[in-house]
Image: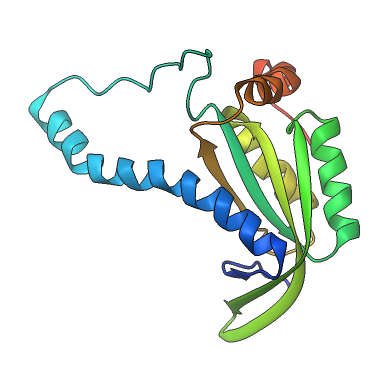
Length: 177
């Protein structure tokens, strides 16, 4: 990509199916929260106590405590370097690289189209700001795409593993590149 980032992604083959399966369930809780926003604003205006965070499930997992972050990279070499670094720094438990995506986006008044690699990064939600700062510090794009969605549900042992692997970082106050 010529210094920009890709806000829109077109995928081919199995990658499109994979992302549609991942994104749709993840977006439903977000959309449902948007409908609750007016109610939350009314309760704040009326002086009612704010709603409590979602309770832990029977497995002990707190919905939204793990996030899946998405980052696009210009090629596999850059994606692997960033992926290895975020796992080594324990900013992520796991990074999947999804090759051969096509991104179509507007950048500086012109419609662009580029082949990219999509990184799917699993981390604690509390680490997303540090992850974002690190990616921005090493990414070759002028504006790196880093977006994260909270994981509401999933395989409990996996979600606990993500938290365990990244636990030492979330306990420290800062993570430096």
